Amino acid sequence: MGAASVIRAGVGCAEVWAERAPSLMKLVSESREGRTGAGKAQGQFRDELLAMARDSSEVALRELRRGLEDLDTFTRPDGDHADEPTRPYKAKR
Image (cartoon, rainbow, N blue to C red):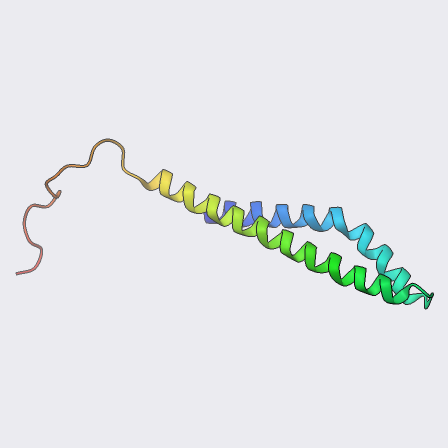
């Protein structure tokens, strides 16, 4: 389940980066050309880059929570819990 969570997080982050990379590349080229709007393009690039990092962290946290829920669900014993422990004697004396 841990590996599945890592893979899901990686795929989700890759999707975020694939969606936003073209606009970032455009902003990079605009900021390097030395035009009058280069400063504005650099500011937009910074904002877009931070937004992309925030979205990636949200994807990773969501998948981590999902992995923890899966682990809890799959390792929880079935049925009612007995009031008596399964080992009614003390292991150490």
